[in-house]
Image (cartoon, rainbow, N blue to C red; front, side, top):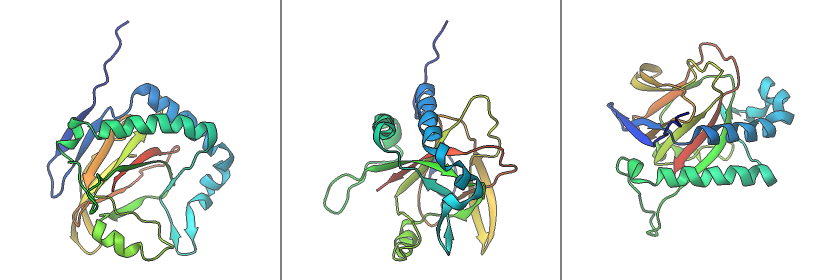
Amino acid sequence: MVTQEYKLGYTPIEGEFKYGIISNLITPQENVELLDIIEEYCEPLQESISSGEFFIFSEDYTASNKWLHPEGELNDRWNVIRVNIEERLSSLVITEHYPILKRRDSSNMKWMIGLTVSSNKELSPHNDDPVEARELMKDESIPVTSGIYKGVLYLGYPDKDYTGYGTRFYKRESDDVYTQLTEIPFIPGNACIFQADSHSYHGTEYPTFKHSRYTVTLEYF
């Protein structure tokens, strides 16, 4: 039996801002391990996840995605793969397109990586512009972040259909009017990545929400 080689790669997509597809950011074995971790973590939370209560932060704010915080042995297992992802994002394959940046104190910026589960609500187009995000961060009831590069790693089972579960990128035509540029397919093990700015509009739209949507968020500070 021939073992298939899974090689890290990057495919840029032409547009008004920088974005593209990272192929094979994790191996099939790591994908299965992460799904096992998430399923075990989420098992006692299924009722609140299904009802949407899990995603409510405050009276005025409900998230479309929420970070998971495994502890103990689950966290140990997650950290092994998290370190692998960080190392791959720091490889030349990625950094020649998304260069290593410095903070004001001359230290390197770093990737923040988190396990997430999505609600069944679509995520309307937004740009994650770091300048706008820093203003919103002043309101402590809205959990936003201001990464320079951002992305989503897709996790999934080979026997499930993830049609329409990918990340969609848009062009803003006017207030509340957006034209979809493309959808990055939800292929387990692959990720979308982009440089956040005033043009980087993205979101999700589910034709039908058939089963859970698990991802790993990627954010460079």
